[in-house]
Length: 298
Picture 1 (cartoon, rainbow, N blue to C red):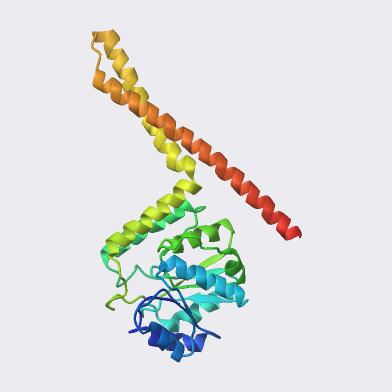
Picture 2: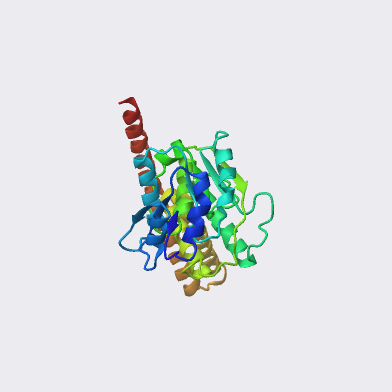
């Protein structure tokens, strides 16, 4: 479990998870309170970051440690008390049915009861953005931090980002590796104070911007190409209108001509950038595929 200044809830989280796990790992992300001594006193394995690296940084340490310990199953749960450790067996049961990843969803089996309306809207926006960045993986709760991973997923997932968008990055990698995903219903508490150090709106916008960056890198033809075609079409239409008006009425609309020309150039540049980046992505993916095949043969 990732933890940052969770002295008020860490004991309950560790004790609640203990009956369902062989070992409990707490990754302390630079806490300034008593999180570490409390977790250690309760027998948890504690790894400390000297500075606050963010949620993604904590996940990097969790997955690396899981691989080092050669674990078969990994459950990640928040340390702030929002998740109920008694729901861990439900995720593990589904994992043992053949799934590689099981996500605890706030929307499966219900309509997100108890979730503030503004959070629901933000979550659905992030769900859509995550699906666009991946290969169309449809998940009802892409931002859920309550998940279980099997051996294949533990070996495959390599988190690179350090922000809260790491959850979406993991889903994209799950899609890339064609891992089997399942969802089970969970309940999340929103009546606990101090569960987030960030404003929900600024947090959501930050995560969305990170996902948009991933889309621009993974889907350059969509991200740059579609706007490029739209701008180019708008610019071309403006130029045709300007010259038709000039030949018909002898009037030359300089403002429309200048704006249309600028839109046309911008559109062509965006389309060119999209095609260049797409070519680079294909080269990189082919290189990675060849390297992976060689590694398996060795």
